[in-house]
Length: 74
Image 1 (cartoon, rainbow, N blue to C red):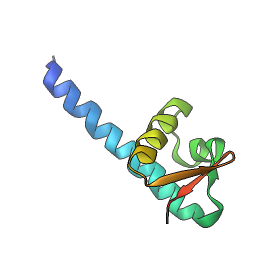
Image 2: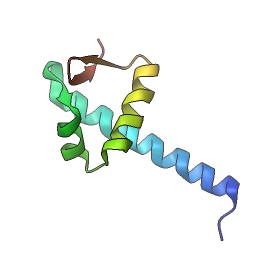
Image 3: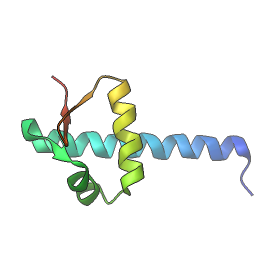
């Protein structure tokens, strides 16, 4: 059985991996960026997982949204 502390550590590790997957997909997309659907298809993550990762990247000012597309800032 996993302790709550271990579970929280695993959840954080997987969240970090999901965020890195989204960032890599956006880097690959270049200036055109990607839509939510394209990110789901490119990463194999669920829409809610992609949304959480994008919000995290947005709070860190690493991703910007233009219309329905997301891209790496800079």
